[in-house]
Image 1 (cartoon, rainbow, N blue to C red):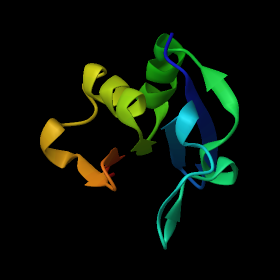
Image 2: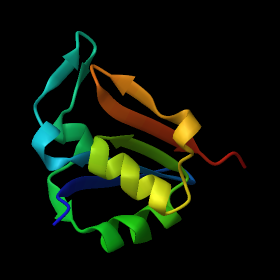
Image 3: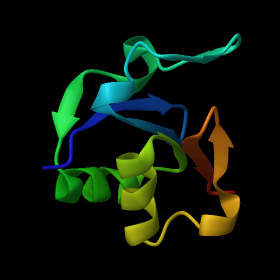
Length: 97
């Protein structure tokens, strides 16, 4: 079973959705980037719930193998847009209005 943590925020007219693999919470990837539950949340969802929430978002921030793979499967993330931070996949998506 996929274990993804999710947090949804609404800011003005934007919906920011942050997803990360559960096993990454608390890991410091660089001096400037820790996978923090304050940003990524602690609400656990399955893949179909994650996709439903991603389809509503205008901004996505995905960290981890499972989270990024889910974004690709949903057709929202291109493989060419994925970066690796200390070997961990990370991707972002913004819908311009």
